[in-house]
Amino acid sequence: MNRDVTQYTAEDPRRTSWSAGPVRAVWFAALTLITMAPGSAAVLELGESPCADSAETCIDLQVTCDASPGVLPTDAELRVAEPANPRAVTAFFSGGTGNVPWALEPEAEDALRTLFDGGFLTVQVVWKDGWSRGRGEGTDVLSCRTDEVLRYIRDRWQQGKLCAVGNSGGSAQIAYALARWGAAPMLDLAVLGSGPPLARVDLGCDPSSPYWYGTETVIVDGSLGCHQSMEDCPCETNDPAFASRFFDMGVVSPLSTYVYPGTEVVLLTGLLDRGPSVLHADLFEDRLQASSRAYRRAWLGAADHMIQASPEGAREVLVTLWSRCR
Image (tube, rainbow, N blue to C red; front, side, top):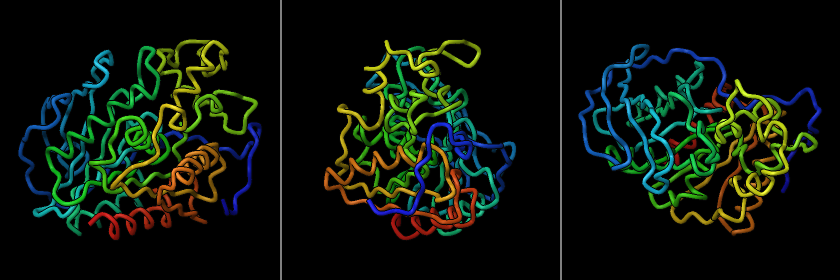
């Protein structure tokens, strides 16, 4: 693997979080009215109304998992910008637990507005309590929620290609959907920014490893039912009793597949990103190479962890979708 990036140790102070970042309002030009339509049987529509802070339409969902009936229902909000005659559909997933929109910064807002003007139907997926909040299942099992939402989006809106964009924790959601839930047949393009950071959860929970998550162990621990108000959580303490479970939980594990027929995979990495997600993305790239899977990895010199927040990163997302998702 040829790249110009420094390796960082667990103690390096330059490492950054892979959380979602601050919230900003998103504004768009006037959109067409969206009509209700049936979707995935595991997704229940709770209501639809104009979004309070943008001209998008907000659709409230309750998401369960057909493949994992023990997973509790959780609520999601879809922020939809639908042009008159969509030529493609793109779903966007933000970082961390995914509880804010993907477009938090002006650069990302501009990219979505340009896509809308070009005929793209855009769907920002916002998990109200987080996609990874669980009671012991683990992030791999709980990612069934993302797969169900993607199927709902396909069933309700797909016209032309269906593509997905995620940054950091959002890239993990998409990677899980491909590696564990067989989403490849419905996805034409997967753009994974700053990750997937959950490639090797066992290494991410190990404070002696350069892959260590630091304070972001809360993502894994929350999926195991150990939330921020609790102490001595398994990933935070690297509990040896969970070693085997952590190994299996990652996107890179013996339980995953790395051959995605019909899905083009693009990895975006900022050279200014000093966090562990760079190393986790390397591990996922290694598996794509080993499976002889065609993919592309772009190294962005002026981007850090939050790819879409930089002009170069937002432009790369826009150009990738414009050229590969129409």
